[in-house]
Image (cartoon, rainbow, N blue to C red; front, side, top):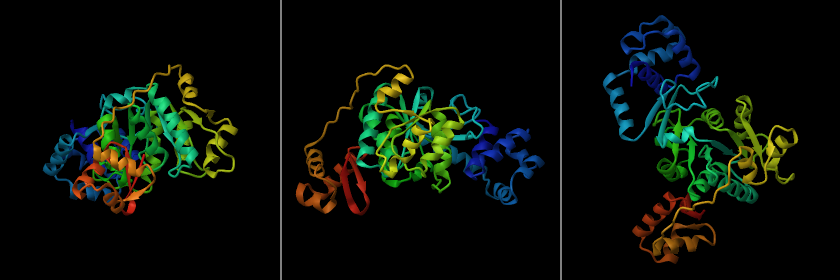
Length: 356
């Protein structure tokens, strides 16, 4: 990594905005740490507090160690000058200057469809999201979403279930996945897909990071599919970014009495989105052929099958599972963790578990 890229990564760690980093790239000529401190353009772009933090917090040895630690953790750092930086993002007006990635970078060059929507989908929303995502992922599209509750989570899990590839763009650092209940899912995505963030690994999600994350979700994708969302929801940000970037927008019609169908119904009514009722609508829009789904083979132990059978009847707490399964506590804990990582169950608050 050259000095310019290192400076950009360090500024990223200080949470300097992309706008300021772009300004620095335009006005600063020498990016060595020894020179940049003295550059008047650099000093003028940063606020007084930001510049003082840059001066007082910089420790060359500690910074180099942090880069090595990220490398050892399998984290790849991409700046706008990296050959592996996503081509779909490079010309966006608000592109992220630095990205952190874990997983298969080749997915960035494949056709992607973003699937987004409400964090609390109805039964209809869950079913239709699973149906469409399964068909789209099986056709060879990489499914992009934001790893949050609801539609995001369903999109990632269903893609993995049919043996497809998925990219999760997170609004936090990799060491602080939000929501924390999707940490196991993030590990699965890291193994079979790609995790992407513009924040350093230790960064904790903030309210403003989720709308910003949505521009990357939209930017990476050929089109954005909205399955279920309220008229005033975070999904609106993704839709607006998609339209601004000239991306295709698709929407699933829903019950006119359901507030969570207001956004897709509105987009269809106002001709801002293509109406879709099945995965083939998206697949054929791009001239791709539907292929047979290849479900991942799931080999379960006797204890794992017992747990899934118990959860088939609804959400159950840990004590219930201990009592009914007769599995020793240590083994039960291990099985629950394995099933969660494999995307077969979800761990809910208060020690409750649910099948997926």
